[in-house]
Image (cartoon, rainbow, N blue to C red; front, side, top):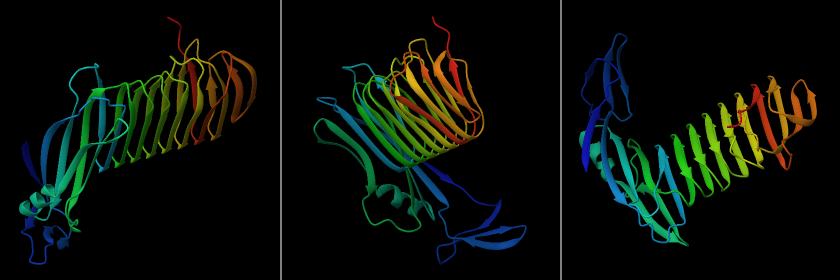
Length: 291
């Protein structure tokens, strides 16, 4: 395990921690106090993941990123854990770091759960940030959620569900269903399966569906544009709508019904609906050349 300590101050001049536990800072405007953490410490460790009978990974963190990279079947699987903790001084930060308890544990039915929690009651001044970088075979169900952090997933051939409250999502998956949802952040997906649901409240959505054949689902944002790439074999019934923006499509369509802010049409041979919507932004559907 390697340990790194970082100390941050709000101004260039400062006074040591006061007796009440606050930080007193001197700036151009005089002295003021701040009761938040001032010292961060960090530890990195790697743990193995048992792939015997592994069918699903469930990953949870409160503040931190999640990164999954597919590895060849039969190879070693592991998770690199980056723990960061903050307190009012170095000793307090180290106490907070020691209180972060990470679990990599089987939970039945071929599922392994990776998560963390405080081993003792969390002190109000503590902060914790735990990120996971996972290397494992991609032929599984991957379910990941973070409150504040990005999620990146590469080359999963099973179902994928990724959720962040504040963070960017980037996913490459095939065969299984894909669900990617964030409240604040962009969504970038490359997908080759049949059911996709991509959602952000504030951000852009980019979806490469050029390797899909029949595909259904929804691609939505409240504030941002939507860009979709389709291929020669991509088929769906497009149902597109924007409140403030335009809809551009250079893909060959049939049975098209257009208005200024809406488009319904068959893409390729048609099929179940693929709903595409934004409240504030444009929608662009681009057909990639064959070959």
